[in-house]
Length: 166
Image 1 (cartoon, rainbow, N blue to C red):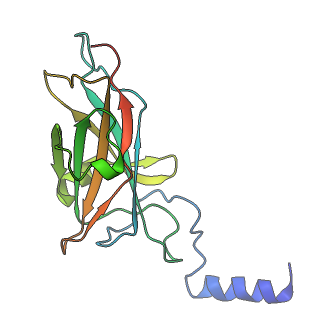
Image 2 (image 1 turned 90 degrees about the vertical axis):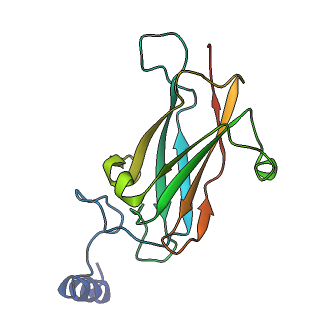
């Protein structure tokens, strides 16, 4: 290691800046109000979690990111998350005209109960049940929307999910 690099690392440690921003800590980061991107990860197929035939809903993980250098890992949020489920494979350009088949909304307080450590960092792992009546289409499209405390909306890319046998 060069002397200059060693000095920089020593100064960073002295000022408390030496935390490794590339490792997920054992405690979640403090919630932030504003994020730059929302990443929605879903299982490729709907899940059946009861003893009756047919799918009951979908499992999701939602990650939030900022692009500034101090936030390289996923963040927790202080806003609201809304999920919209559409029947069929709805393309991004058609979403504005499409009517959701089902929606779920979670406040920051409710989200805290879904906080977990995912493989990429802290996220919200949420099961979205649709009740006794499953969608009639073979696929559904799920969209997550983050609403910051000041009302700014930010969308994740739509995810297509196979329903499977009904």
